[in-house]
Length: 234
Image (cartoon, rainbow, N blue to C red; front, side, top):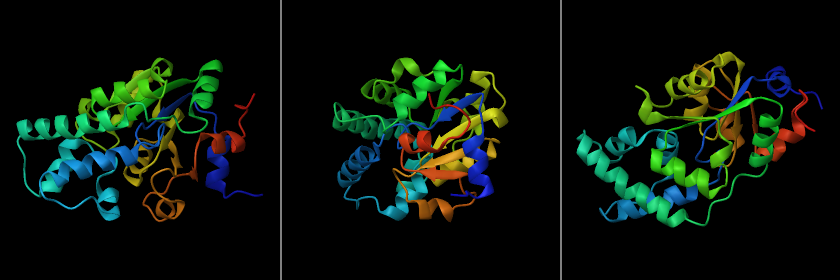
């Protein structure tokens, strides 16, 4: 099979570092976030999140999501209280239920074996990051973590990916990113990274129509490992 030039480039690209989004990318946990959001909204007499809403908010920070949901400006105290409520429900609902996406642990272990540093770049708040990485048994395998609350602008701005590259000490152009949402792909590409979309949350057609599109898309990390051509496979 002959791949389009952009796909061939990303599959033969040897990065100096790899940056992973967390929710929906390393772990297929968006159903638990949806349940938590739906319960949060139901308490306020609001409808569950639609797919259209998911496309608008997936990948954003809570400080941007909650004003969108309520269609008004919110105080920092309001946002903090809403975040504590919704994210607390997510952690409770998902406890004992989360598994790393197929191939995630194998890919990270192989990267570390060959001296390639690994970071997470996420919009999730710190308690969620700790909970999720612990639940999927990846907490001790990540070199650096960059969170959206540590940078001025959330995704689709490149800030969190740029912070990840800085923490790793690697130029963004030498990094490969993995994302599960068009907003996250836009952020990684704006940072100057090559980006592969994991289609756990959105379909390949959604990514093909996004602007910018990813360099390639695949269902999980086993699929990437089966196709990569720069010598990562043992």
